[in-house]
Image (cartoon, rainbow, N blue to C red; front, side):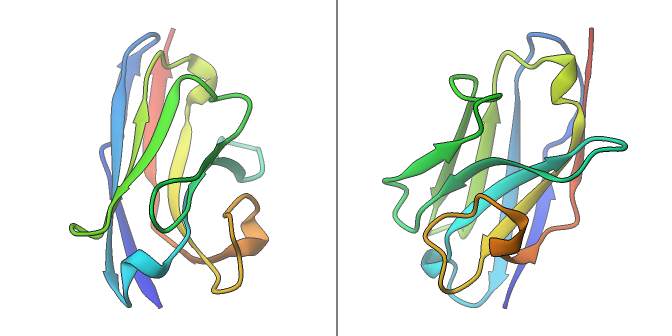
Length: 125
């Protein structure tokens, strides 16, 4: 299994930007489909973005499309989530996720094999 540690969360104002970082260790990172999810208080964990092993294919939730960008660096064993034009409704705990061996995209929680501990993002209006 791969171990994941997120960082980069914080308190920002609406319209600001943040970059989340997920550092991986353990088994070969480049073989994993990676993703980001988020969970707001009282809500279920939801898909945000997914990226394939090479970075050539990305998927986004409609709510973040055009504002968020997922990327990865297989040399540094790291995946990023660049978040621009943040809105109060983006407030949540953000989780890094590694897909199970058989998935081609990490778009549901059932497809996740490993989770990070989460990092809080709070956007004030």
